[in-house]
Amino acid sequence: MSEEFWVFGYGSLMWKPGFPFVERCKAELANHRRNFCLKSVRFRGTHEYPGLVLALEPKDGAMCQGVAYRVSASDASETRAYLEDREMDRGSYFETFQTLELEDKRRVDALCYVINPDNQDYIRDLSFDEKAHIIATAVGPTGTNRDYLFNTLNDLRKMSLADPEVESLAERVAALLGDQD
Image (tube, rainbow, N blue to C red; front, side):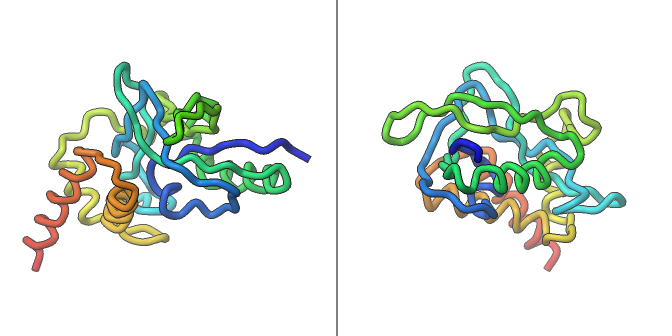
């Protein structure tokens, strides 16, 4: 049997964890930022037209707010296998344990998926407008890329967490979608 552990969610893991947990709370990860910089061909795009999803990027002085989940020891092995399949299929991330500060000021080490800077799907230099266009138009097996963005924004708002880039992208994508009507 494995030991209990924590997982940090900053994108779809916030609103669709897909695993059982015994505790969920707001959390902050220092020196990392949430960024739409990872091509998605499995979930929110295709090989012909990749979508764009969030990744954790190391960045000095940044603070990424999200959700920490505590997974019980009895669910640990199955949850780790699930997360490995979901997050590690294309080598996009490094599985690392990082120290989070929870909303009640506890500090815990949590499993985090941090972008692999050498991965072929990591896109560093997209402009804001390029990101918005991809997100507005890409569709993959699990749905539209815009739904991924709007679900992330809605979950951040439900938790009273602010992310100006996600807010701005959502506004721009909504405007692009309005232009298509």
